[in-house]
Image (cartoon, rainbow over all chains, first blue to last red; front, side):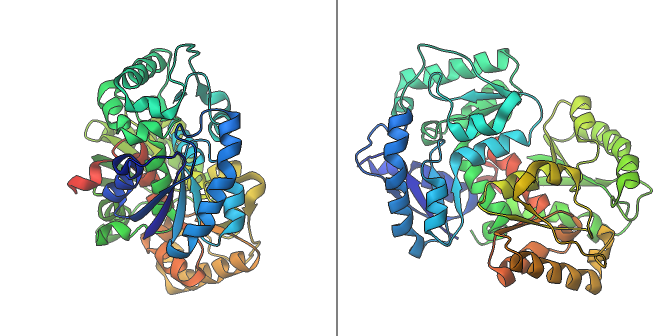
Length: 217
Length: 217
């Protein structure tokens, strides 16, 4: 299956651009084409950056739809999801709503691991009373911070705090954590399920569009 | 990853017993052990059969947990899900809630394809206003009916009616449809995403527990 992956940050670093696509390719066998929106090097991290990103995502969706069987908006805030769906004829999955959906299928409380105190809308809307957040004034503020050691240590500390506070499952509410393969590290260290938002998006396509894809991979 | 699969119907037919496990093994590379509850050859198809199944599922969950990394209750009604989670220390996924969650990550109206007019609780509870059902007095009434040509033709006709009525995605609300690989047939014929409930359950484990499993498979 050909997946068009919309990266909701601006980068000329090819390794970073393809980090999510490689995860989907290696996990599910998809053929992934990645493109990034322009002029947002720090991605989406607040209301203004979310509003700015949405029309750029929709524009990329239009451009990529002709050569893809499905699109993934690779950002936990699902910028432009409804508009992209209205604009194209193929399935469009948002990493944020996919991650929340996956987390909800596990039992108990869901710890949200992301940027500082900001919880992306698709995640806070879905999790309701099962959501557990930790108020951390000193947390990471933009997704690209997870590319640096300080951001990684910060995420690890926050994840431990969530489990200590009673989280039965962790949902990664920033795809910056997907870029560095953080979920696998956390699963080993914490012993609880950890939902990677990009993998969750791919999972939804596997369950509904291409369950047999992997045998061919 | 070792998955304990709880089949919520009674069968001595090894091909049928392992049909869901084979789907998970081939799709995700899991090592699957399947066991079935006793004394319910027609599975779960109404309130009484659901109530009867729940304690049997919990008993199997207790017995299988020691040799598994996660459990799947392979029935769209999720019998005994909450109790099984309370009884064991590993993740437990219900095929019904997993299927509903996966369907919700796609846009538009969700057509429910299952047994006659009965919609399993985890699916009707989750889908809310996005749910589309067709009232069919003559529909299939027990999951084992999908093993016979009449049941297969009936499911195909019902799926076409759902798409004609405006369904943008179909969710298979009976794992009897998983046993016969119906989702793949429907995807080709209907051109819309079709959620297989057993594959959806496996998808949730991939996104949260073992995203790297497939590379080893």
